[in-house]
Length: 640
Image 1 (cartoon, rainbow, N blue to C red):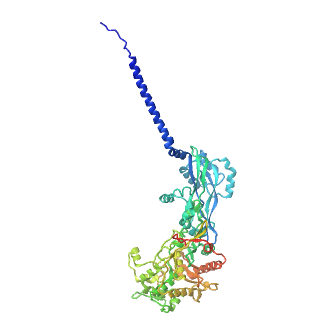
Image 2 (image 1 turned 90 degrees about the vertical axis):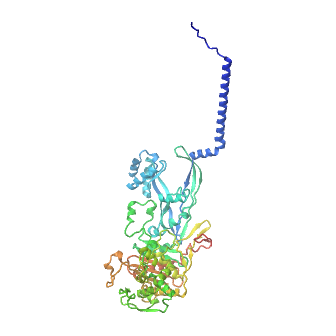
Image 3 (image 1 turned 180 degrees about the horizontal axis):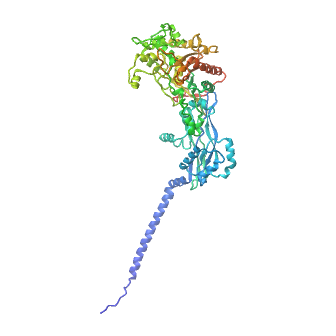
């Protein structure tokens, strides 16, 4: 028996109810989703408006920093020493060319492009954004600018840009005092990041590398401005929205006298040596010359490998001999040895010894010879300085001993950095028992002390130390930290920046200053003095001390003959002095390496420098020291 197929009976009411429930659920879901959407729209467009508007503007608006113009540098009389001059460069925008090499080749037909310039450009092109221009050739001459301007319309990717670049009009003459600026490198950037100064240097291309330019970088740099620009999605500028100009760096007025500086550089004539001149009344550095020198402008635009290798010569032009050159002070410290002996009461003004031409320690066979083989006869402190008698100072040093000598010379700044306002400085050596033990692991011997009496042995000094110690003697103990900067330019005029005055060198008997000064006076003004012939006829009275620093030992039975000695082993010529004698205005040191006698080689330069400076001082008043209404601030920042 078979059953028939039956069609299921539909319950229409039940289906309608099910459909209604589903429709209601769907409708509620849609409503909920609409509310979620509206809530999110409200949250994005109202509650989070500032956040997303900032992000949108960040993609559309860029803030471009603007580098400030670097402050200018002048000498004490207003002569410009460092300026900013327009410099033209040939640049390429990589985005505008499909073939950089072909573009460079095309430009090479118009102007010479060296392999080094080509290589440097291609390296920069890999690091920088393609829509930014990159320098291919800098320091274009007017002729090159003209040649390029005629044809550049055929090369759309290339253009000529003019920017202000540092320029040093006196070039070699001031290099070691001013220093120079150079392009920021990785080390500079690391220091800037460590100091949290990225915003300050965001647009800066160059930074002070040496000398005044480096020491006063923050004053000279100024404060950057900025430009708000609108850009498209490819980073191209659409329009400028706002601009805040940068603040110009402060102009600096140095204590240097450019006429004195030029004369010193001229007189050294390329020989290895240095001149430092200081005003004993305030510590102002009037001249600081190191020779040989080099052109700092080479570093401003990026020095070539060839030019840099030329500076690595045996003459070491990169070294600032004024502050980094260390020399045996030789007889230029005999007035200080006299002071030490007078203070210790080892000698008096009237003490005299018999000089046979040599000095011998008890139970020691080897004599310490005087430069005059037959001796100077009866010698007191004045004659000892006048004739530069070694025997007298051998005896003085022996009786003083190393401890008293070292402690006394420390008070004049030997063995210490002078504190002059540049970073490139050595402290040289003021030896002591502890120093020799630490350096050579040896005890101090009596023979070591004897040679200190004439500024030899382990004792070394920098020219600025010698100049400052001479200024202290000239000023009867007044002690300043040497300073190159004299004032800076502010809105209300020049802001004076006097040097720090340090605790004076005090003596138990102030008359001892007079003895040392009179001894130096005799060297220059008494017949037979080692500098008498050089200063004879001068229309001012000065005081000084010659020095001849021996660099190699001579056997006891041999005589010094420079013709038998290699040039670089010959004696250094040295001179220290000050003028005028009654009211000193300038104290100086002249050092010439391997030039022989101080009286014959160094003293004549000192005479010419005194002539120049003292002749002009009344006719060219200093801007730095003659501003009637200027503020004065010391190095600690306190207004006076």
